[in-house]
Image: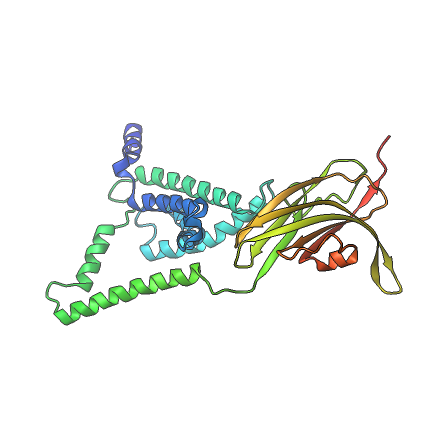
Length: 328
């Protein structure tokens, strides 16, 4: 194949009517998956799971297989499907592992973005590699032939009324099984009610917490709340500066002093996580612990103070800190 023919195949391959149907379907499913995550109505419907699972378990691997094996004799259909599942299960965790060492971390937006970019890149490579392969050797999913064969097997021309009725029942049973499976995955039974409460360092990771700093310096953490209570909840977060000492006789910490730094409310929908950046400054050098306490709808009065307020919290976290005098 000379250079002129090579470029001609590439240009012809990228014409809209020459785009392989299987690659177009994969691209469309990827776009629909993104819409099901971010559109307000779709992200709470079973469609999010119906399109989200293939986005993690099948689509990236299929795009990679299509890029690696553009010819029909490279792999048969069953091998392509099996390897698509296997490679997707391998690629998705590897992408998550790589994101863990980036400033973005392992979160929904970075993971979805990375999977989408990987899929689109592999689809572009697959399209290019198929375009330069002769048409008689190019892999093509025979959708029309598959539909014709399925129709001929299920509804042959000389089929009796009883057999036709049984075939219709079989098709309906298969569709019902698929819909039921999607429903069970998308709408699981109500499980344990709980709330996630965590703090991250200023970089968005569970590291580099501000634990030793000068008084008056600007510090920050990220406060995360994940609602799994099966209802929308308006939480109240309080940040308390405390001084605590260990009592060896009782093997417990004794609260000597406490001061409230901030209090704010956060409304978190069910099955959603909200992360709030929290900048703070501490002037006192006689305090040694920063307490983060979370209340749900039950918020005690301001008269409840000291250890009683810490004990009344729905969830609580703390950082041991060392505040040194400011540099003169």
